[in-house]
Length: 450
Image (cartoon, rainbow, N blue to C red; front, side, top):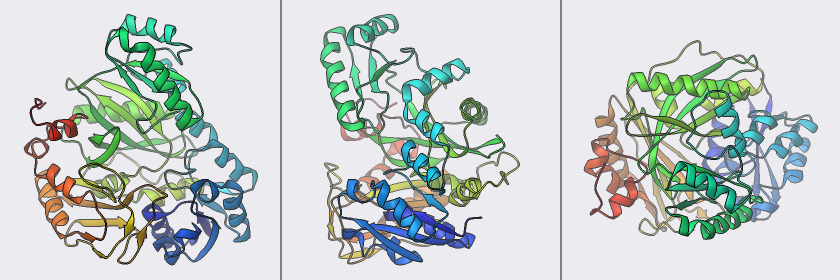
């Protein structure tokens, strides 16, 4: 096991990593920008190093500064958390060149996970089901149009190096195609430094379901069941749960087998997530491979009784998987992402938190770095807390989440707590009738439910 780990991140995920390290008996180093000097992760770490000003490219994305901090503190490994440098293969390679372990998969795994088009090609070749579409990147609007005519409308253009909904355009008819292609290219270039696109059939009613996988250095792969991630806005997840109310034992077995096949297809190592779209008819299609710990990992931890951060660190240290077989989920867990945002318009609401009162009681967990008197900076992601509950079944988990949301008090800034209350009281959510169009229907009740 490592003796000291540097956490190249901030906020609640940095706090989460520090706690896992402490339970493993590992010392921690926090890095921080000057605006984060009073942050919770800085207070909790054994050591801390300022790596630059508030702008991410001068601090949390500043590879030389992070590696220098690791060398100065004699850190043996770096945990990237999620976001920032967590899916940057050059950073993983730089760690290796400096003799520092990267807590995550290989640079090759990360590179492939970031190249959605290439990953799709490999999965298709290995027998993993993919959505009908192009056999790789489309070189021009004319080439993409030929594919669209073959598979039929609607189609969706996606950035090969993309994620989070950026560089995506849905096209419903040929007349829209040229403009949509140019817009998607421009968005992709701005967001990811590449204008490469691929094309897929756009399946309008789908569920976004992902499977957690773990793989050790000997190539042994295990899955830990699925997470339901269909409650999202503009491809950004807002509420997740495990297990999915839609998935039965037969489908769970199928999803797990495909996820393991996908991981083995790219010789994956460490902790990762295989994301799928699933139709109401239970047709399963590979979407992407996420090569990091997910924001929503706590729901899997709650139902499986596994600390994924500790497993991630153990695997990076060369340990073999200590889970011998698939574990059945126990009860139900739900996570609500509490963002510092206007709950009506979903725009950031940074500022000073006047009061911060966390909920408690049986089955309630809060992952956060926020506290009373802390100022939420405008420079970073708006996530300030994750509220996770566990119940003996979905009904109890929903009731527990409602109670916890009522107890959660955050004043001084706007948060998405009112939005989550709206969802948790919606009949369609309560009865499990959810898909990726749920939020749109919630805000436009005249639209038919699934």
